Structures are given as structure tokens and as C-alpha cells.
Image 1 (cartoon, rainbow, N blue to C red):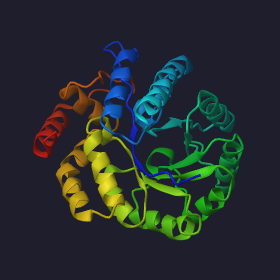
Image 2: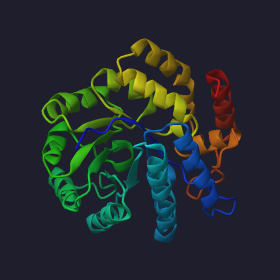
Image 3: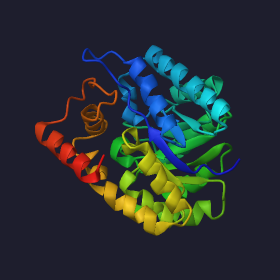
Length: 301
């Protein structure tokens, strides 16, 4: 299995004012991403408000995204990857979601650290051992800010030795930890991908040997972020740095009132299908809307 590299969109789930899912809007967003040259799509992640979706809604979104990506790849000779969010703090459910990803034909399953119940390191290892046995490539999702538990490098080393563990979405926000993962895991296991979970750390991570980003801002500007990632992967750091600093104000604004609240606001401002949010998320505050507007203008988006 070759190492996963590139720019991958953590897709939002567009919704109508009454909170129902806008499936046609989702189709438009998938098509927009494909036409803009994205390397892969991630439905049912954090940005997709997955905790508020029921399984019927999830199934419908999967049954839109996967056939569209497969048809695009077939007709255009492309290899856009489909990563499916499959995490839970209940290991039995996580296994079931990973099985669903495999049965539906996803390329990878993204499995977040079990949240809220704060398992021990051994519990986390056993969780990933269970999902790894399903038989689809797994991307570990490390995001202490949402789960309450950081996967330290020594634990990730142990997890990385399990079958089918393909890489990590590193959203610890700690570039030193990301470099340690590259040093202690990827340099010894070259097929292990290290992807940023923070848009603003994409360039320094790739410069350190990382592989790209699972991105929020690409919901709005997939072509620019993909160009940044590919320039950096190709060693064209002057060009990548210029794009990084052009987009830096939007990297900040896209999280100024939380995620996906801020990116949905930006998409609505630019006429892309996004719509409303489901409680407990609410619309961006007026001051956040102004921050987002200014960032879009400054970045030329």
C-alpha cells in the first residue's frame, strides 16, 4: 500500500433552515471538490456534524459521495480517495462503522480516539486493534481538544504495528509531537502517512516530512490548498510559502467561532451550499461574521 499524500476535505453537511439535510447541496459540494482537483474527500467527520446525524442520514450521504467519486475516477482517470468517518467512543459501534466503510467501498476509515470516557492507553490500543481487524486501511485521528485524550507517540508506535493502520490525522496542535511521529514511526515504516488536522500547520508539517492535510478550509478553497500541498510535497517551498501566508488569515477565521460554524458561515457568504447548523451548534456571532468577511476579502477568496 502506497503512502497516502495530498489535500483531503473534511466535508461539511449542508442543512436547510429547519435542520434537515440538504442532500442536493451535498452533491453540489462533492462535484465542486472534484472539479477543483481535491485529492480526497472525508464525509462524516467532525466538520460534518456527525454526532447530530442519524444513521439513515449518514447512509444517504455515503451513498451520494462514494458513487460520485468512483464515477469521477473512472471517467477522468483520477484516483480521488474516499475516507469515511467511522469513529465512536463505543468500540462495538466503531467496528460496525468501519465495517460499513469497507462494505460501501471507501478507501480508508478515519477512527477518532474514544472520547468522553477517557480510556487508558491499553484501552485505546485495544480499541484500534478491534477496528484494525475489519480489513480496511485505518487512519488514526488524534485530537485531544475534542476527545480529552492525547495519543502520545509511544502509544501510536504500538498502534502503528497493528495490521491495516495506514496513518494518523494529527490534530494535537503540537508540531514537536508531529515531528516525533515522523521520526519514530514514519522513518521506520515508510507507508505510514502523517497528515495535519490543522490547516495552519500543513506547511511546517510537510517541510518536516509529513504528507498533507485533512482540511476544513478546502470546503471553500480546495484548489488553492491542494496547490499549496503539492508545491510543498514537490519541494517548491517558495511557492507553497506564498500560498500559506495568503491563506493564513482564513486559516484563523475558519475557526474563529468554532468548527463547522465558521466554515459554514464562510461558505454561505460565498454562495456554496452550507446552510444552518444543528443544536447544540448555533450560527456564528456577528463579530465572527465580520472577521470571516474580512479574511475572505484579504485572502482574495
